[in-house]
Image (cartoon, rainbow, N blue to C red):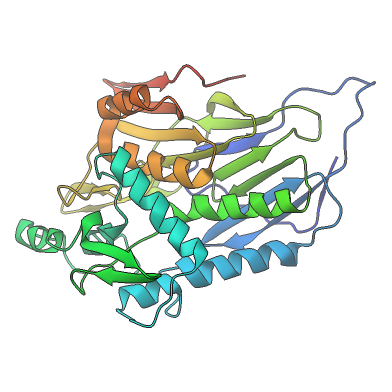
Length: 341
């Protein structure tokens, strides 16, 4: 059975994945005792299910709070905010250096579609922490911003972040949440926990089995837009088995706005500076590390269906489930290694 140390119920922000516990136990199969801790972090929820008795909610809260003091764009004194505000005294932590290294790697394999320097464009399109009620940017404004957007616009020297232009800003939304999932998992690993599932805002990492001795099952829901961005009733089209892996899902069908009759999605292509009107509705990526799954899922939304398919053919180290519009119906594409129930 699962004992809750803290009770909190909240949907995933994207509304596309959920943990499912399928399969009844036989009378001879006794359930193990698992614990569940839930709470709030990074503007969303977190949930940790694990086979152990020694942890307390405060430990996870503290880990995630420390993470926010490094990566949150909403905390003025965070390391990320200080870098964006051109604080030259910042000495990068090991976590931040790892974040940069992984960001550079994902940018290199996605033809720079993934780019953490996209922050000024995100703000211009009214999807960032500095976004106000300013109008949709003009092409001239986008072209101006693009002159200081790009992974080549900064470097790291002696644990310091060096900018080519002081207007360079970075954002961690598309990778940091997955990284926080990894850090919680690594914390559990160090404490010798053999079976767990970590879920931070629907970015997940699993180890071992659930309380019924089964591989963790993750339900992928049908992407449908709600009214005024509110979730609609969900149906599970696919159930994936997450076997000692990480999973992240990105979608553009829930986070958007309309202005003057035009729909603007939160996915922005840093190479064009434009929001991406894509027939790819959601991308679920499975990788060893959640930091990579998170970043690649985001990149898929900017790449679109065909380029995403080509990417996974070139990079079989990742598995993916893509859900996209084809005419009036939804179509699913999955790589060969995806295991469904």
